[in-house]
Amino acid sequence: MTTENQIKSDALEINFELLRTMPLPQYDDDAHKATRGKLLVIAGSQRLPGPAILAARAALRAGCGTVRVAAPQSLALAIGIAVPELMMIPLPEKDGHISQYALPYLQDQIEPCDAVVIGPGLDENSESDALVSDFLANCPLPAVVDAQALCALGEKTKDKATAPRIFTPHDGEMEKLTGKPLGDDRAKAAKAFAKTRGVTLVLKARETFIAAPDGPLYINKAGSRVLGTAGSGDTLAGIIGSLLAQKMEATAAAIWGVHLHALVGEALEEDMGADGILAGDFVARLPFVLRYARKQAKPLAGGKRYGLRPAE
Image (cartoon, rainbow, N blue to C red; front, side):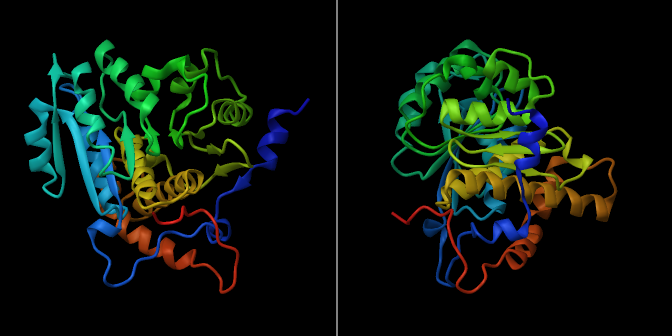
């Protein structure tokens, strides 16, 4: 029987040597917003409006061409003012939550978009939970499923998804997805879940595991304790969603997103210290770290390249 320690020891550690094999999208000087991907972010509630802003800003800072935020109608104006670069999709709401009647509005956004982030700032609510399940069941776009969207699915995701899905739970959310305690078997659980459900799993912690449906297990050891702050997961979801919208393959997008997020944490701790860092600081620092990472992970001439979906 394979043990947790054996699975963990076999995991591939994420570093620039590995990242060279799954290069970031490259753009010519005449690239414009329409060529750099279009992301739909379904997020926000009356109690939690901030995560929509953090996820959307992170997606833009990670290079996505355009970002549309679908949020409760009462929040749309405030979010749009906070991030004027966004396109807002005001949704029907009930008691400060996205209503189940929002489904047609979201389905209208599928054709013009390349990828979806769903979950940041969605509060626990039966109508919103039902909407998440209904939307994801029939959405043909690759999607990052985060926060309350994971809790809405719970153990419902028994069948393999019809489109690429990236689940980004922390340990507590992972237990809701599996219906059982996680214990110390994090690597084993991540690998089994990804294979059974047919999704890419990002199991977040100080050491984050990324498991593909078919393939090796990856481990990210980079980072800093500054990443353990409110809103950090929302920025990570936005980064990964941005890379998905830019046509990266799901597991490559997850690996790059996790490592970029970790490198931002390291840079902030070095410059500002380990205390008092806000998730908004991650967003501001992201372009500088992205520039650095592009240089460090530049593919070698004639080297193997994979990880990008062909442009449509």
